[in-house]
Length: 141
Image (cartoon, rainbow, N blue to C red; front, side, top):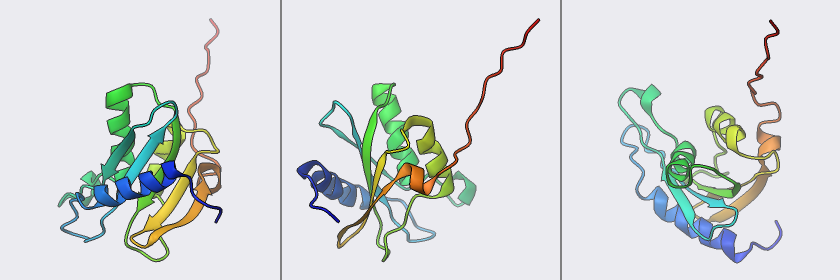
């Protein structure tokens, strides 16, 4: 992997810290995320929050996007760093990839990391090549 920019290194440290806030009493699988937006120096964080009713569990990735929407309303995501403990690092789940496809360009960069550092750089289009897209059809009278 090519050398990482200071923005990506900072995002890694921020995501690693966000992971410490994860609520994962059932799986023990903790994830932290840092989402970098274009034209902003701020990193929006997220962590996974489990629930006894597993279907209500919220992934770190979706939490970060939701927090960014609350704060900025309109998103222009630049990249995301995801930190888990696994080797190799875990990619986003299908639900999170579909969620990202709503707001990101196909070339959106996703950095997968574990507690040892960033291990891989992927693009959204490689992980989710054909996301579901809603088509609005006009009805002719």
